[in-house]
Length: 67
Image (cartoon, helix red, strand yellow):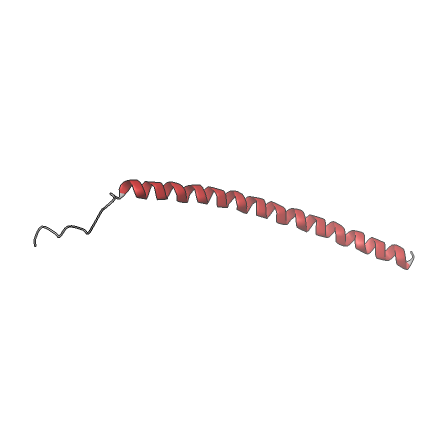
């Protein structure tokens, strides 16, 4: 086999490995993005629940009854 044919074969092999790696990385990124979206929705829901649980106070807190 000629030197040129060997070089072309080597490049084709590298490209095939790189294509597989890129595909695997894309799958990981897609999975992580989905998880991030789920976590963001959970945070928003928890934030809303916290706001609904805590009464809004205006001004300073009144002193305790034993004063």
